[in-house]
Structure formats: C-alpha cells, structure tokens
Amino acid sequence: MSGKLRWAATHQYPVERSRGDEKQCVADAVIEEAPVALFYNNEPHVVMLATPLDLEDFALGFSLTEGIIAHTSELSFAHAYHRDDGIELWMKIPLERFDQLAHKERNLTGRTGCGLCGAATITQAVRHPAPVGHGVTVPVADLRQALQDLGRHQVLNNQTGAVHGAAWVVPDTGIQCVREDVGRHNALDKLIGALIKSGTALDQGFVIVTSRASFEMVQKCASVGISFMAAISAPTGLAIRLAEETGFTLVGFARGDRHTVYTNSQRLFL
Image (cartoon, rainbow, N blue to C red; front, side, top):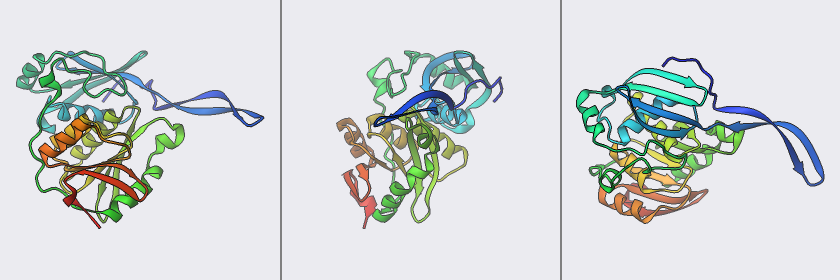
C-alpha cells in the first residue's frame, strides 16, 4: 500500500485528570477513528469508521465476509491514500465480482458500531452461510485461559480503553492473533483477514470477541468456516438462530470462570 501517512491509531491529547480533590495535567492516549472508504475497480462502495491500523487485513476480511470476493486471490491492492479527512483503500477484483457488486446498493456510510448498515435489502443483509462442518473442540480450561490472557494482548485498549478486540485461539497453544478496532465488526474483519492471509486453518481454532455476539458476527465467522465463537457479552436471538442453522458453537457471557453455551455445546468440554 502506498500514500502519505497522516493517520495514526492513537494521538496524545492534554487532559486534566482528577481523583478526589487532586488534579493532574497529563497527556492522554486517545484512539482515532478514521473514515475509511473502500473502492473496488475505481468505484466507491462503502465508507466505514475504523481504527487506522491493519487496514489491509480489514479490507480483505470485509471483502470476504461480505461476499464481495470468494477467495483471497480475487483481491489485489492498488493504493492507500491518506487524505486529510480520511483514508481511501483502492482495490481490484475480477470483473464478474465487480458486476455482481454493482447490483448491491450501498448506504456508503458505515458507522463505527454498524454491521448491516450498508445493505439496501433484507436479502443482502441476512445471508445464510453453509454449515461449518465438524470444526474444533475446545477444553473449557483453554477457553478460560485465553479469556485471562486476552487483556495483555490488547495493546491499543490498554493504552486508550476504547477499542474492541477479536482474538484467534488454538487449543493447547493459546492466543495466536489479536486485532483491535473501535468497531467490533471491524476488529473481527481484521482478524479474519489476517488469518486468511497467513494461511491459517480456520477449522482448528476459535474466536473470542470483547463485545456482544450479534448476528453479523456469527455470519462473518461461519462464512469463512470458523465454527466456534465466545463473546464476553450476550448474543442476540437472530445470532442464536443462525448459529443453530449453520452448526456453529456460540458462547456468551464468557468472563473469568463462567460462560453460557447457546448452541452446539458438543465442541466445548471439561
């Protein structure tokens, strides 16, 4: 990727911090959210608000989980332009994929927390991935250890306290990859992009997300063959129904030594 670098993941801001009756003037690390415009074959598709870090991972993960491409080989990067008011990612995809994309109307603005806000129709939004297959089996001890370890892997959140994390965990090995973003969907797209770029076997591990388990999160995982996700907060009903439909293991309220399994509990064992 090329272009003049102007956007960083964090910036220092002077703040006045108080505790009790004591005040202190210090520099505070604040996370950035940048408008990131995705262009395919020279045409704008959507603008997402995202942390300006790991953007190639984000673009690849988004393109795959949104069904814009079917394989990483179908996407190539042309340029990344760091503008004063945001970042443009210019990519190339095969003509047949671009023709399909042209029929998808987009809202062209994706808020930080949005998952389906760019879709114009219910059919576009509620896609049904194929069943995930046998997938991974996970000892409860491995899930708990990964939850305990996740905090020290969240570098940006430790600095700013303002970002979600998505982690890839392999049983008996631990956390292998973490991506962070102000948007939970963005963090997951970044993680999926990074895993696919590195050739990771997606049926051999599981995902932990520091957010609720929404429909889109299950959809994104299942669409690339991931079979297990644990979230620190609750799932939605639509997420549970999609997990049941695809044979996906969905765990919520995964914190410390407790968790709730909502679907396909056979993959998690003591």
